[in-house]
Each structure stands twice: as C-alpha cells, then as structure tokens.
Amino acid sequence: MAALGSEDFDDEDGIVDDEEANSGTHPFLSLNATDADIVYAAKDWDIPTSELSQIIQDAQGISKDINTVPLKATAKPILGILQSPLDRERITPRLDKINKWIEATKEPANFSLIDLLAGSHQSGNKQQVSEEALKGSFATILAAVHSQVLVAVLEGRIAQQYFSDPDTRLVLDHLSAESATQRVRPGIYCNAIGHKTTGSFLTVGETYQVLDAMSLYTRNVNPRHCTQIDSAIRPNTRTPRRYIRSGRAERQIRIFTSATRARVEVMAQSLSLDDTLPSSILEFGYGMDVEHRLVAHQKHESSNYVMNLFHACCQHLFPGKYNLHQFVLFLCHSPDQSSTAEIFFHLLGNGYIGNGAGFSHWPAGLSSSKAYKLDAETWSRFSKWSVINTPLQNNIKAGADTLQRLSAERAAGQGQSIAKVNQQESVGRRLIEEEFQRALADWENDVSELLKYVAELNDSHIGKGKW
Image (cartoon, rainbow, N blue to C red; front, side):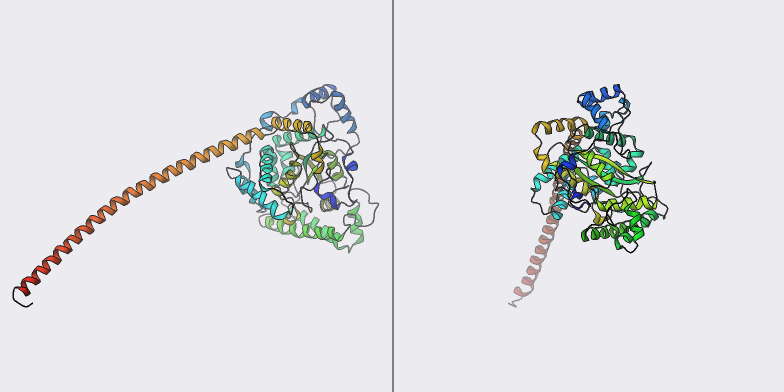
C-alpha cells in the first residue's frame, strides 16, 4: 500500500491497489505554457523537453480546482527563499492554545522538539522503532523543511499563507512543480478547506453549522438531509450515507465533531460568531505519486471520509464559498522519511481528529514499504535536489552555530560560577578567620577571667586556711 496516504485503509471504496493509486496525471503544470517556457522549465528541472511537454498534455482534463504552477521564469523562486533557515521569532501562538509544538520549536536548539516528537510517536504507536534512528530522521526532516512551510503548519494556516504571503506561495508552488515532473516522487501533502480566494477558514458560526450538519448526518434521522450531503460534491450512485460505511467510521466522525466543537469553543471565547477562525483543520498524507493522491482526494475517491463529509457539508451549506486547497509540503530524500515525515507533519500540524484540529483518523507512517524498493540512484537524485532547493544545509549550519553559542555561554556561565564560588570561598575564609579571631579573643578573655577568678578563690580560701 505504499502509494496510499494513511487514511486509505478506511476508504469508502475499500482498499485501493497500487496500480490504481499510481495511475493518473499531473495537474500542477500550466496548460498555457509557451514553447520557451517549456524549454526553460525542462532545463531547470533537468528533464527532456519532450517528456515535460507530454506531462503538460497529460494534465488535460484534470480538475482545475487544484493549485497550478506557472512555468514563467519570473515565478521561479530564488535560492535565498528556498534555502532560508527557520526564523523562530516568526512563529505566533495559536488561539486554540494547542501550543506545545510551537513552544518546543521556538527554543534555540532542537533537542526538546526532537525529544517531544519521538516521545509522542512512541507513546501512541506500537511499532518497534529505534528511538535514536527515529530522532535522527526527525532531525533531518526538520532541517530540510522550508521555513515558510513549517511556520504555516505549526500555526494551522497553510492555505491562508499561500494566498497572503508571496514567499510561502513560491515555495509551495516550487514543491508542487518538482513533484509533478516525475511519476514517482515520494512526498507529504496537505489538504486544507478554506475560502476559495483567500484560503481563510470558516467563521465560528459557520463551523458550528457544519458540525451540526455532520452530527445530523451521523444520526441518520433525516434522509433528505443525508441525500443532499451525499450529492454535494458529485452525484451519488451508491447507497445512502456514502461517507459512513462502518460502525468505526460513525464513531470516528463523532469523535471529530465532539473534539472540534470543544476546540472552537476555546477560540470563541475571544471571537464573535461572524469572526473567521484563525487556524484551519488540516489533513496530511504520504504518497509515492502525490499529485495523483490529491486528485483522488479532490474527487472524494480513495480519500478520508471525515474530511470528505466536512467538505460536503460546507458545499451544501455555503455553495461555492469554500474549496479544498491542496499542497505538497515536503519531498523525501531518503526512504525512511516516507514513514517518519508523515508522522512528523501529523504531530506538528495537530493532524489527528482527537484534538479537533485535524481530519486524520488512522496512524501515520504505515504506508511506506514501496519507497524502499526505489534504487540508490533515484534516492541520490532526490537528495541532490534537497541539498540545493531546501534550507537543509543552512539549518544544519545554524544549528551548529547555535550549539556553539550555547556551549560558549555555558562555559562562560560555568567560569562565572567558578569565579563566584572562589570569591565566596575567599570571603568565607576571611569571615571564618575573623570570626575565629573574635572567638579566640573571647576564649582567651574567658580563660583570663577564669584564672583570675581561681586566683581570687585561692587567695580568699587557701590563704585563710579554709581548705
């Protein structure tokens, strides 16, 4: 099941085989590219011009709702943006108070974050994984994730940032373009429901309406309501309640609606019903062919039924207002990342249904076996791309500089502590000596007085023959 995302085990269509999941076309290239554009892009991406032309032709007929990447030379991201190291000060706390990942990320070194990631995965997943290997993989992924992507994921604002921040858009489009150039390119994607032109999430009141609609659908007390939801995205030719195929699915949807309502109520304390919620609900997944997976999600085929039902309710209640925005977040450059990167993004992006901030209801990192069948030459090519097109080297250098600075500060602190101790010892010795001298003088005085007293006794008693 290597080509499938983590939700595909509970898909409404059942388990999809690898051939079905890997077939399909690549929607992320501009269909209006000129010959000069194609020649430029083919050279830039190091693929034959004829192959790129064929990819563009293959993209005909794919849903235009999915983000497309222009091939204009002026849109090419500069390396300074792609390679920019993480700016920890840029990350802002979440209004829903799910901030443990943000707080760990903002620390100057990555030790706490890596430990937290490994601990959270180990405590919730029974797979036997070496903790050191897991931490090493997480550290490499953290170094290679684009700064703009990591910040947007942590804040739950990937779609909003895509539309409002030019650098974020350039990076995400660049990742999509690279993913689209190859039939097999293991990577991590993200689905985010948001306003069709701004990417912003629903308002507080709209979110409550969607959750109510999902609950009504789950209870199955209004057949007409269920029929309308079933046909909101595309005509339903199956049995009623297409998004609930098992008791487990119904339970998972109930968990999602309950957790999401609780999370929204936290944010609603400082918002009105008409205010837009600042953080979206995100869905993360892994695919050998990311673009094909995104097309399937867009059509609600081989997809995530929790997200699909939420999307369908949005379309039913607010027709044409909200779209399913889709992004490539990370392209793997070693086979272990096909598993650990999916875990990484699920954790940092709060992607599970249990906290009301994610759509995922199946453990991440279980669908990566085919990545290990790719040859060494392929992975070498992926690694070379990551070295040039990600902040991997700059983040490693920044991390080394931070460790060196912290080490120097610690050494200086230890030196100051030693000096302080020495100073304290010196002062202490002086105080002790002074105290000793005073005590000695007092003792000598006491002895003198005692001797005087004894002499007086002798004079008064012995001299008078009283002994």
